[in-house]
Image (tube, rainbow, N blue to C red; front, side, top):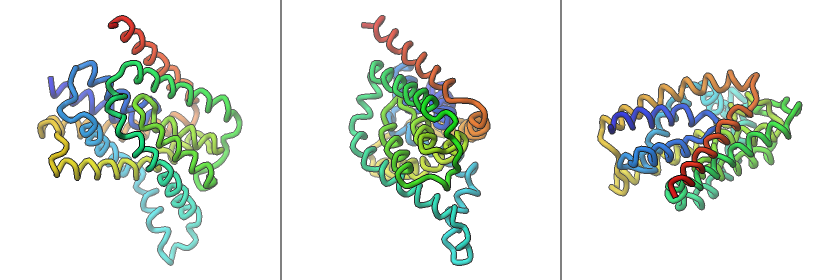
Length: 270
């Protein structure tokens, strides 16, 4: 059963990390359904995040290299990359304190069907409202984002640590509200998520080495890691291509339906 849960959790993490449907909400729901936290709870979720982090690094490698090498003296002409770098810094600087404030409450939120449902409904509201507000206003590219709009993306990313509220959905919405095209907002959302995932992975890695966190067996971790990494890479490619032509309503409808199912299950089980 552990390996079945490992495959399911890896697949869910890989797909939902980059789709605007909340990976944390789906993993919490998986734990509730199977009646297990795989021995690691939030720590195992961050372990799976590290697999999708690698997938994102592979896909965005050229962007990452550009953000690093643009500061070399010979690349003074790479002004767009330098601007994008500072927008990412601003967004992450806003995200950090919010995430730290909410972190102590995440386990509790993950264990409540009602709170999970509210998180999914919040995702629906954000996605649908963004599409309605930004009709015919999505023209900009990542380098056109202002510092105020970058801060908005960071704010939405910080709040989206709440289980059920999609991080990618919130940050894509923030970028679109800042005037970015849907596909450009998606790329920015994925890039701005990398530093946060790195910090979270390092933090839990240190706690793991100190014995404060416990992970499942080696083989369970390996299976979940590989499945999450492969499915995550495929999800990034599909998501960017899909949002070039399709609206966010599809994902909003899915999270609304999932929220209704959770409330129905909670009501029946009372």
